[in-house]
Length: 330
Image (tube, rainbow, N blue to C red; front, side, top):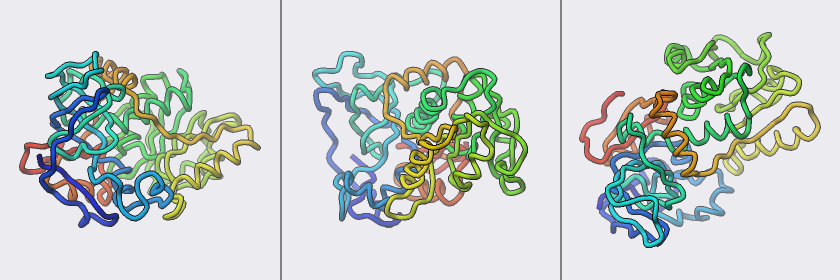
């Protein structure tokens, strides 16, 4: 089968498009014939081997596993002996450990869910990591309630586009922060108010928010706290802490500071969950949330897809398809 692989850390030139052996599903796994995958910030960071602390898990000098990609949507080709909830031919989506940038990949049954009926495979592939992160942030970390004033810094990105929709679904009054070019897009997601970060600093305004999601890290913790209510919650999912610790440094600092202030300072680190993908499936099929896909690229052009995702600040998600030969907008 064809796949995107990487055997040394570095830039886009370290990614290879080559023929590799088709994986085999273990007892608790399924083999998926991949229809689509999507790009996440973690793909970019892991490609470079950053932050360095992550190499303790993924390989010190070179990647332990050459396969790349984590979000996937496709059709089950084979099931392991212990799998009962899924059958050959089922249309599914999942977050895998590695290997979604390929014609076939394997996924643990606990990380798997049936694909929403209302959307395409490409849109489904845009869901797993970004939407699960947003759902767990809105529901479990921030515990958003009807009427809460919520600000989402980075509202036009992958996680942010879902966070806006989910916060609205939970009854919040949502303010989205984004660039000038994305203001209308964030409005279409359902945001009640939008702030152009190139013209206005939300942290110096008069508004105070019960919850702030910082998905960008372009404002300091002190600035974000200034825009919170006295007992508000700051949810952190980003930050530049250098090549060694990356965003972990900022999250650790917030957790330490949180011990001495009345506000809740919470890091957001989502866990893969088939159960949450089922929740998201129901929300998508009900029309409550909709994946936002900026562009789609064929498998062979995955390096260019990653470049676009990082350098062009994609609106929503960038996806990978196995069969199409030319990238398309939308």
